[in-house]
Length: 544
Image (cartoon, rainbow, N blue to C red; front, side, top):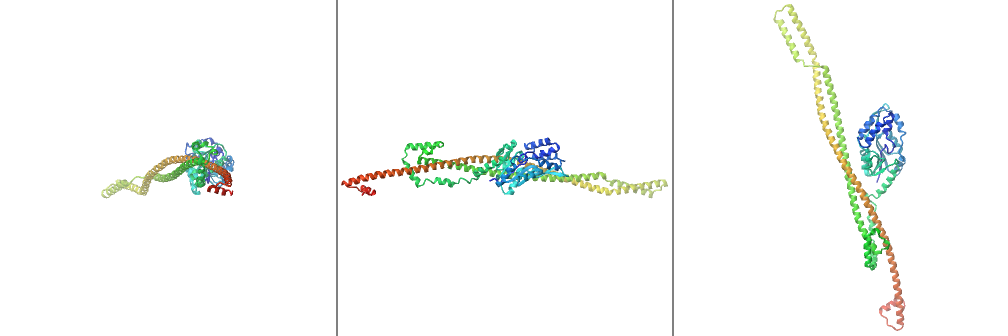
């Protein structure tokens, strides 16, 4: 039973592509349209296309956008269709890769229950070229599955209407997928096609689908076995009596019945007697049993295909979640790599500014020379000029030594910076290796997704084919039941005729016996002696 109807927005509920309308404000609609078309045709990933297009919209005034969005036309029948669907008890959702600036307006106009869309980034009243939202990193099918879980329903209780490649998974996985003036890739996978811009056609499809659902062979509740059992049990004692009365049918009639059974498609039941009709009915009931067994087997196979498809879709969802978690983990690690690179580079820049070199050896040489000069002054007799030269040299060396000692703090700072730089570099190396490992794991899971999706698509096609085949077989069952009812009607008519003939025969016999009794009585009056049977016959008609 359908409970939720999901609409795409651009080119489905509205008669345009929202981003193209916004692009017209700064004259880049052709550039944007080209990227949009590639995305709709499935030539580039939707996330890539949406980010590229939104970047090109940077700087457009949000007030101008609101003014344009107010004039965006709805497709024919949008409000009427949504109103009627809600009146019939369906929930309505909009799931679109388009934007808040239009999605919220359309949600209000058609009175939709839910809307999922992306949000344009705005700074100082203008677009900043950024976009966020659930339809950036997720497929529409993921958003729909989450909504279905929240509503406690399954995808087999959903209808989806879309037009582009980003609707594909949604169209393939719901019970009823409708391609609305769609691209070829979507038409190939949809259950129904609407090739004109009139959403009221959705109501026709819903009416047909609900009619089919009531007779849905997968969950069939119509055609109860008791209905047939009542017919099957009509061979009661009364029927047996009629069969016995029909034993007078000759061999020619029996042969005709066999021929009629072989050509049941052209049987004129009005020309058959009760026994012939009974034989036809037994043949039909045997065929009905075989048809029902085949249909029931198909139903079980259909249920199994649906179960396997749903399990694969759940596996796909789980695998995608792991892959996205891996991507988030990788991005977080890469963020740490970047942070450590920045810190390492800062340390290296500080080291360049200090420009230090180790001065321990130089300081020792200066001190050794000072000690040597002091010893010379103390132990040798020098002229005043030579002594003054040595004293001046000691003074210069002492100043140089003090300068080196004052640089020791810079030396310590430099050593600390070098140690930190090496630490940050080590972090960069370790984190980069870790990010690469997680990236490879992510790629592995994304590769798995392709295989799982292919299996899920194949299983969905098996489900559709099996359901269609079971539906066709169910139609054969219904046709056979109608044929049996038709035979029953003629059997009733044949029984009525038989009773009428029996009554006529009885009246003729009575008249004959009465005439015979009167003749016997006349002979009795003439002196004839009566037998016991003759005497009883006279008593029966009160002649004596």
